[in-house]
Image 1 (cartoon, helix red, strand yellow):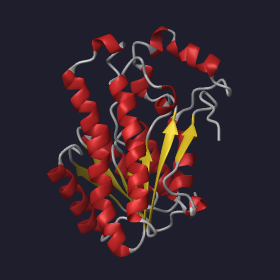
Image 2 (cartoon, one colour; image 1 turned 90 degrees about the horizontal axis):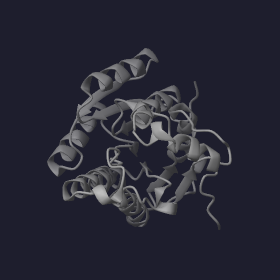
Image 3 (cartoon, helix red, strand yellow; image 1 turned 180 degrees about the horizontal axis):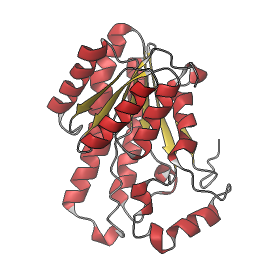
Image 4 (tube, one colour; image 1 turned 90 degrees about the vertical axis):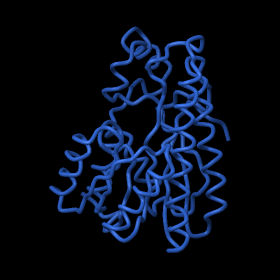
Length: 256
């Protein structure tokens, strides 16, 4: 338990399961009150919110499809109605097209969905929260990207394109919303969530190949990555904005 985010109001998209749930738990343990967004995992979101309350923090859940602007407006309005502000937005929602095992299997539907969720959805959330944060002259936005932007993805090019798009949004809104709002992106590698472990390629050799190429020889659990999110969300990174932080155990070592 810490106090880096004491009494801050944090909105976490996709907070009902996986990495999002770990982020919610981490920010609550640092003193934050949390709005847990979900689209379809209502039961998960309610359970995660209850965990926040058990820590003595306030929590709420809010449902919406972030690829729809009306839903995003309603989600943000719901959080403001409950808490009166949003100090930190963590854009965790993303789609990796995990069922697609080859670029040859790409469909127009998958392209549209991944770009809608990862690029459009992230942009809408940044935009709606950013407007209010500028008015309040304070705010932090952390986008969850991916290390896929370093090497690309022959499996799912639309996923790599979407995560590149998030970097463009990060730089653009960091410039647009400064000096009051900081906007950064975390680029993790594979994280051993339930969704990852159930992927066909993960169960048929990719996990072992990934570990072999990773300097730290380890695939982290969600709890091992949330510290990097906290760093970008807190004043520990107070003079960093428009940045992309790779967090993948040395799988893709980026030069200066």
